[in-house]
Amino acid sequence: MQEYKLFIDGEWTGSSSGETFDDFNPATLELIARLHKASKDDVQRAVDSAEDAFEAWSRTPAPRRATILFRAARMLEERKEELARLMTGEMGKVLKEARGDVQEAIDITYYAAGEGRRLLGETTPSELPDKFCLTVRRPIGVVGLITPWNFPIAIPAWKIMPALISGNTLVFKPASDTPLLSIELVKILTEAGLPRGVLNLVMGEGSTVGGAIVKNKKIRAVSFTGSLETGKWILGEAARDMKRVSLELGGKNPIIVMDDADMGMAIDGVLWGAFGTTGQRCTAASRVIVQEKILPLFQKRLIERTKLLKIGNGLDENVDIGPVINNTQLQKIARYIEIGKEEGAKLVLGGRIIKPLPGHFIEPALFSDVTPDMRIAREEIFGPVVSLIRAGDLDEAIKIANSVEYGLSSSIYTKNITNAFKAVEKIEAGITYINAPTIGSEIHLPFGGVKSTGNGTREAGTTAIEEFTELKTVYFDYSGKLQKAQIDVE
Image (tube, rainbow, N blue to C red; front, side, top):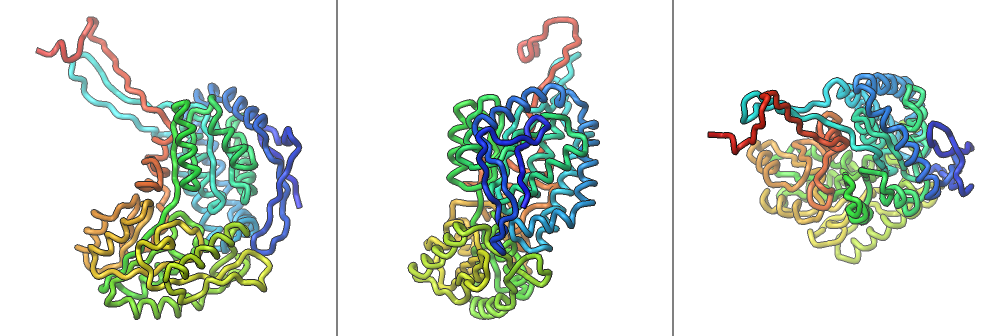
């Protein structure tokens, strides 16, 4: 077992309080690390460090900033397998998914580095003679980043790399359940040449460390991925200082299966969309809305396929489903399964905590006879629980899909192009897949949702740069006289 410190002003330093917390493997309950717990004073030191580093970093030409990110991307590639195994041991997701998580970090690092030679503005004609108009992007300043445990290196990289290439300096708090990948990412960026103070890592409780980040007046923007309730609190607190806020707050994602769909492909999609990462994704497919004509056969085949999934330690290459992150989440999932039964839904498969295994394991659960008003069909469970919902036709399916407060990812399986385009037009979601499950975005495309999924911002793609820059409009008047815009127009 190793002990890990905070990273402030380019140094690994102990917490001012001397407090620590423990990190456990959710598959074995083995203690794998002890970490220093930041205090409010430590957060202030990190903010001060970032503030001191901002001028030099923001004045560094973006292509030079990019060279550091390109170097870091290559280092991530070289260490991909090592990082994936570390992730499986700390977070629990199966090894093939952990490799994908690291690959996302690699991809976004290369992508953000490429933006170092773009950071595009626009030029446009002026309405007056001898006048030139353009826009430029400027860094915001000191930015606070707060990330969840389910994608322990991908989501931090989705935030860190665009923020860095844009010229910001950072105070970063990873989830307490999965800090080790964030520590390794900070080490890689430091080794790649990131200057002292540009990236500061503080770990600990959200109420203490996250709260201190959000309330600090020197932090000009906050990017958060996590729960709806915490997001609402952040938005309210940040408004006091008019901070820029970016929120990604979860989903209750539907897969619609029409009677003309390729059933085998749709079942493959449901299995991956619902049970990948043990259902612990904001994009997880927790509602499967099936046209009533095919529902009995679809349910039968889905049960048969789900029974074949192997549960266990994700380091075993043959395992399909790993553990839940911690006991609190395990008990939450188990409680939702009881709620589903109490509401009148029929548990047709699974849903039991697996006692013989030492870790936090639960069987994937399938509910039938679910109605859209049930809590299991409306509330984010964040576990391997699927509600099968009957729909008479596409209009009813879309109405059901839109009946929840979230709107992140969505999917429809159909061979009918009219159905596909109608779904794209009418489903209330930031992402819609045709004949693929409700997974996330490729890194060069925007990621985010509508309604209570967030506050309208998008991560990745060109929107990643928008999240971490201020837009300035610039006018050059070389007419040699005072021009008064519309007043001068004859």
